[in-house]
Image (cartoon, rainbow, N blue to C red; front, side):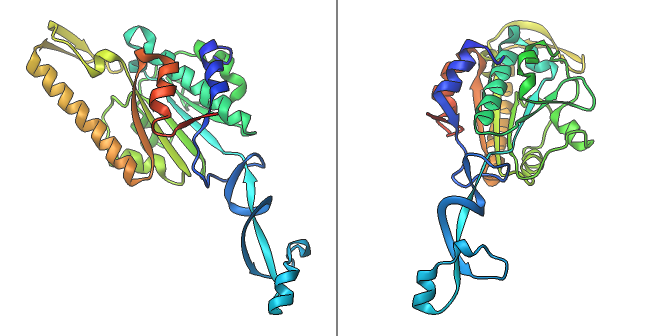
Length: 285
């Protein structure tokens, strides 16, 4: 996926829309909450034994007879974690969902890497514990099976998904599994500096059409139900999907996170330009 032409075009056109005061991490290009040795002045405080004398403001000492030191905002690179839902539901609809999910994973990894960071990808397929991949694994992303049977909620509950504190967390999923929006967002946002949730749905999942009698099979549990996909059934489904999306959106707002739904068939270029920049997950270069 590293050499995907669509991904490379997006890498050249966008940067990650980090908050103005982002996360802690290694020395790099982003401005952080702490203090360090970058050139941007942050504030004064009284001199303490051991402080670097080069940061003493001698002009202020001459005026006030008090030793004050200048504090500078540290320069850092973001610690980025990508959580990729690689369950079987993500491989449905002729693979349009999984294609966009892998492209976005590659895109965010490369954008974080350009800042000097070492992004980590949690690939949630059937491997247990979940696979942890680095930026050097992008070339083989498309070769890894998307065959997970456990949901993100289940992996969090059993403690299999270990997340690092003070990281930028990007979750890419269809979120079509049993979940409590408040509890899920609370778990994902805990000790995170930034949380972005990108829901990828196929067009049919958003706007299903009446199709008569059908056997619906859960691709992850193999459970099935025979239903008549009549207008009333579709209306009920749309209402439930709307409640799910609204619940995730409201829970995200309370946690100062971002949640957005994108349609896989729209393609990476359109999703980046119209959707992700709209919520400032991406910014044009």
